[in-house]
Length: 483
Image 1: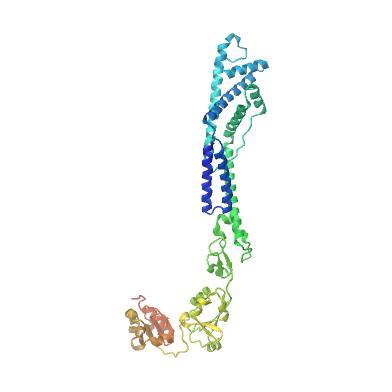
Image 2: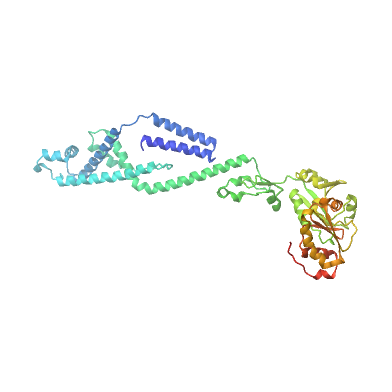
């Protein structure tokens, strides 16, 4: 690889290192160490004097010529063991001067018994040229391999045997040793290139896997140190997050994505670093006790919805449900007028969501009671029951639609029920809104005690009315469609 290609490759490596820093693939310290290393190598290359192309060309020609002479001398040495040392040395000098010149100066009769003919010398020269061409092809392939970026492989090639090196030195004794050294290097490289090509590919793959795995392990170790946590809330060692199996698939190490995940698993009430490999369930909130007062005879007293709301606000809440009969003392003490009622201990003040929910709570005698408007408590048990009575509180803009859906029920029971409407935006129905803690419209009141809200289909309205009132017409079916 010439000097220019080395400089371009180092500059490309420096750009790649800069991109890795911007993408947070490498740390700042790693970037600085790599940058200094590359810049020092660039400075060395740039300060080296450029080698003239003519010298490089002369070196290549001298190398190829020397290789041809060495190979020919080796063959003559093998075939002419009976010749004297002086004849071997003279024969070697004649080969260096050239076969044509030797044939002109000496007659055919003067050739020794072992001296090759002109045809044999031509054949040997042709063979040397073919061998030189074969050596050049691996050399070209080696240059192509060196031009490929990001693959740095050190290949150890076989060195010529001591006998072959000695033979080359004996043949070329008058010559300088420098060309012979270059010849050995070139021949060694070209000889080992073809045999080591397959091994080189294996080495590249192994090095790439080792570098990639080491980088992941190093990155995982940094995360463990930066977390500042020794042990997870479930007793597990956080260092396990840096193991290769979890790094290959980070989703496996995610303990929680929200507070709900921790509450559902019973590992805490709060998720730290949700959705990441450092996610951790922990307990931050105070334990809160909630007492639910209800009545089994109440057809509309459903508590599941409000339980879910309180559990989300206070993850460490515990619930106890008692009947209104057993809780008479608490009902009278706190002045509760509707069921279900939700009574929370004073410890709720220490809960982190207390300030958010405080406006929906009424403090009474050391307890907090969820207001009937916030809980939607439907049963106002302290009010006098009025059988077969149906009231509706509505607004003027929805009056026509509400009455259109209620009319089939009124027609079914004809004069057997007492129906009254209250338009709240006109001022006449405001008193009932406060008495029944109404927060949405339309709202229906059955028998002056039971409340439910929303536009109802004729069949749904009939079923709810008949749940508290027994009439023969209750067996008839009405449409379930809402107009």
